[in-house]
Length: 243
Image 1 (tube, one colour):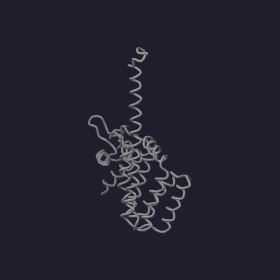
Image 2 (cartoon, rainbow, N blue to C red):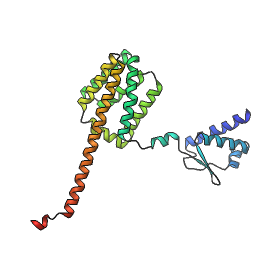
Image 3 (cartoon, rainbow, N blue to C red):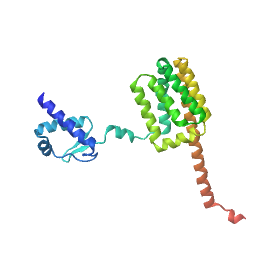
Image 4 (cartoon, rainbow, N blue to C red):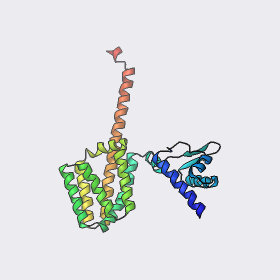
């Protein structure tokens, strides 16, 4: 038990150094002998610690080369490609069920907060912030922290990825009245404690949004085709010969 405690202690110390940036992703850890001297433990204890770090995906052992620090799993997830269409589909699936659950658990004070966000959307007062707050109130009303975390992470993607931000901006700026109507429909379903209606209203909201995203994408693609066509027409035009 003492040896186990020792190698887990080493694991925690090395993970702390990795987290602090002392050993950044891609860097090589000091040799086994040096680590044993630094932490005043045996080399087998260091080997056990390295194995544990490898299992936890913090390091990679390369034969005849050394032990290299890996990126944090969350960092790899954040760099994973994700389109506005994928994000919207995921939001529909997760937030649809969140609305259905919240219809049973939401409180009167939370309904009042939702009503205030609708008023903000209607008045145009920080409408985008009110939109986000509306969805977060619903996720919190589920009383399920995993749901809250999932919704928060999806909103984080929406707010931090430039391509997704631009795609949503092009859509949301053109549909304030649709957005208000859809959120009002969700609110009414929650107020009536109707899970099926809440789920349906949330799906309706995201269905309109994803179709609008497709419309914008198609318009941009068509514009690009026209631009390239005009360039080609200018290159091969015979107008100067027939005029």
